[in-house]
Amino acid sequence: MFRAGGQMLLAGTMPTGASEAFMPSQRPHVVILGGGFGGLETAKTLSRAEVDVTIIDRQNYHCFQPLLYQVATASLSPAEVAWPIRHILRLQKNATVFMTEVTAVDVAGKTIKTKSDSFPFDFLVIATGATNSYFGHDGWAAFAPGLKRIEDATRVRRNILSAFEEAELADDDNRRRQLLTFVIVGGGPTGVEMAGAIAEVARQTLKRDFRRIDPRSSRIVLIEAGPRLLPGFSAKHSAYAQRTLTAMGVEVMTATPVTQCDAGGVALEAGRIDAGSVVWAAGVMASPAAVWLAAEHDRAGRVVVRSDLSLPGHDTIFVIGDTAAVNDAGGRPVPGLAAAAKQMGQYVGRLIIARSAGRTLPPFRYRNQGALATIGRRAAIVEVGPIQLKGFIGWLFWSVVHIFFLIGLRNRLAVAITWLWSYITFQRGARLITEVPPPRI
View 1 (spheres, rainbow, N blue to C red):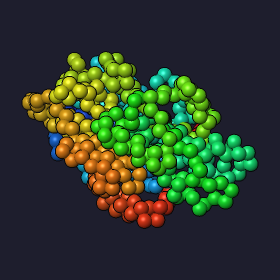
View 2: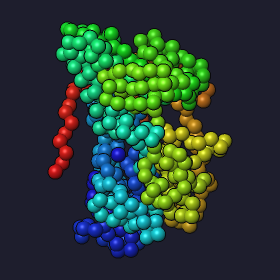
View 3: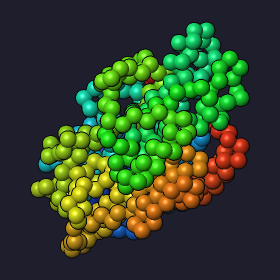
View 4: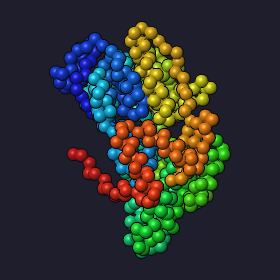
């Protein structure tokens, strides 16, 4: 995952407890749930439309999830990968942002219910993303955090750095070995990137910082249940990623499902790995949108939508991004990537404009813009149509693309300078262990 000022609502209705600034309007009211890639793109597409837009998110910021692993491994700070949604939309006069949590959707009454207020809508866009999936073992979340939110990334960073600190204090060799063992579950892009980054932290960044332990002796294990890493990439690039990680000192286990996860590590069919820190990168589950809508969904909880991304039987309700189950022109599921969410957001924004004017648009068509993954400070793989890169050139391409898609010149410059400094010095400037804040009363 806000600003509230001057938003007009349809037919004289207004949120419960809203101020007198909310006056009746005859313009269509578009409610967007979620301030991620898809939700923001929808709002921006509607910036000049004769509609009123309300964005609802439980967070006050938009997070650039592809770089969360760098927050988790102390390369970047949270402020460099997240921006207040209010600031992003500050110049869009027809948009109002509310920070609150959705509890239900009244489809028949065309109303959104939240913990704070109720919001009527003429058009609804659900872009609430996805969360970590533990495949029916939700209790594992307490021991193996994933990487979906800033809070997840700072928790993982705390776990990793605390493991080194506790190992420095430990007198028992077995306890030290456990603390200096890091397990990453899931061999997709996030898992591969995390494994490579943790290896660099242990082998380079921290190698001279401790006196009683040698961080270079750390054991980093990447576990994938499938037959190979990076199943969304070509077999040759998958093999390249595995070779590169192995050269960095990462143990790669494929065709190895995790059967148990607890505070002491993970259990496998062939044994157990005691670990001081476990990171989950094995799967995702859509937000509760299907429950809100009482809609058909797939095994990952994604709402099955029509070719125009609308809910079957409801031409004014749309589901996009990681929350939607839709196929491309070739019948393949559209992947849960930022590029796909942005394309869906643009399409739905244009479709709302068209339908408000009594027109329509052809079905949504996903344009595959390729896939990228980095494996370390000098290696990445790129598959963008005919562009097939790996190694240092691939890493440069990956870096430029990610800097380009950051929001704001300040963040682009800050990340570019941070990466250059880290590349030259092997240092990471965000190595802070922060405490868990107390619950709000």
